[in-house]
View 1 (tube, helix red, strand yellow):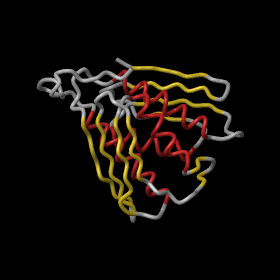
View 2 (cartoon, one colour):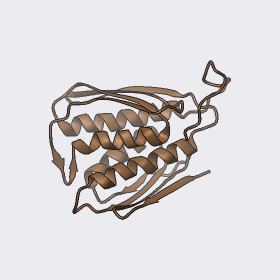
View 3 (cartoon, helix red, strand yellow):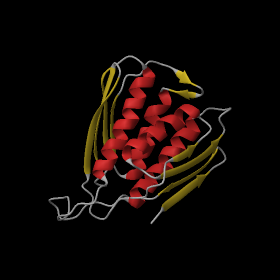
View 4 (tube, one colour):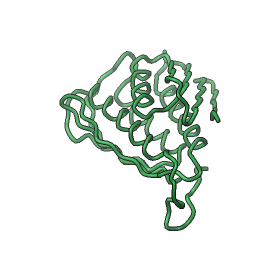
Length: 193
């Protein structure tokens, strides 16, 4: 079952589809090649069959597009989360001199702990400041607690690529179907709003 959502404002037009368990290669186009590369890395390592289409007022500021992709992607991930997921996922990814840790709880509560000091860089319109906005929008709409920590590194490209790859790996783990009972001592796992 493919989960789809979209968002259209005066600033952006975003469409995201996810086929949980699908074998389709990710297909991503936002108008920001560096952002596409990051999302592609996340999808590839997360084994996520994602189709993401984004248009936005890039001539004003890519922030609107990046944030709105996070909103819609978060809603799609929430909608495609299995009824009884493993729930927790984590990964530590080395990218040359960079080492990035991701730990997440896909349990219905949104929180971002962002410990990533990135050197200010602009990658073809994607500024390093946009990364935190993307992750914040993602977790707020997915109902996910996400801890991102850069443990080593000075190259912003390596740090961000490590973060997106680690997020993909952690999502793959967290969204797997549990074989046992509910992944909560409460007996009920919160569904994202």
